[in-house]
Length: 156
Picture 1: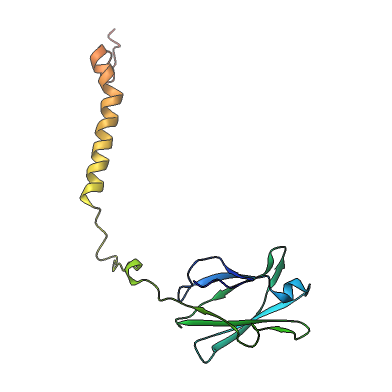
Picture 2: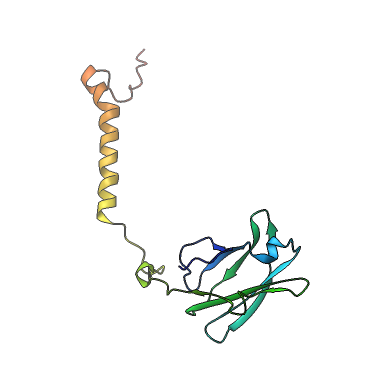
């Protein structure tokens, strides 16, 4: 992603339909504005324009925004005195990438078709049980101290 001075995201790529955290340390922060609002929209026509108040921290003003399935995020900032930081009338523009389809996992499980455990998982459980039994009982067998529960030896 292209780096822009005074605007930081909590991710290296903006992915569509995700939530990102944005930090702003631009001129409105540097001029000690008490309140700053982010004004943002998507695409070439600024679709779905939203304005949100930002939280002031020691690291700048911060906000979380929801990205939609557009290819571009446009934004600018204003303070409570209606002073704007819009990148000298060019706005701040960031590329939004498509979500990778290969990471999507679709499972079609219902109660009628229960999920079957993989054979390797079942075999690993069986092997672990066998190893446990060997470690626990083998030394007793070797030493002769192993016997099933003693039967009631009250023979009067």
